[in-house]
Amino acid sequence: MQTPNLPAIRALSPAWNKGRIVGQKRPLKLKHVWAIRVRLELAENHRDLALFNMAIDSKLRGCDLVRM
Image (cartoon, rainbow, N blue to C red; front, side, top):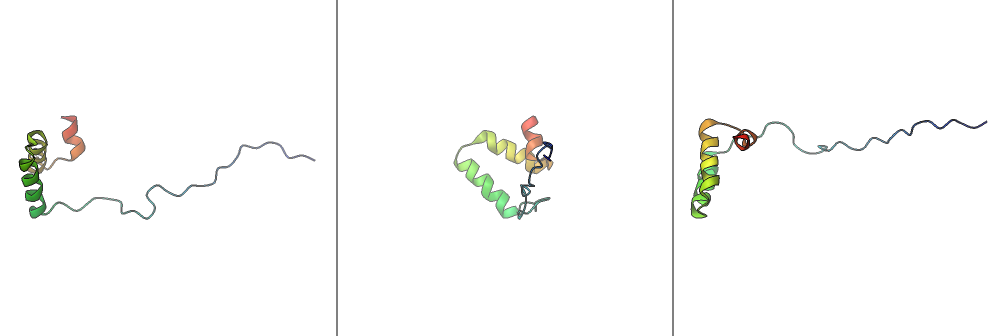
């Protein structure tokens, strides 16, 4: 007696975030904010500096700024 062809059951692959820290990240410290600002100013990267300043001042996320 033969068994009918049943749909193959896939083996469960490990989760993409297994072993990674997930969830909300801690906010930037003040010294890190100023370090980023200084590096952007020295590189004369005005566009990124403006976006960074607007994000910090308005407390927006990066994905929200990109939509603007």
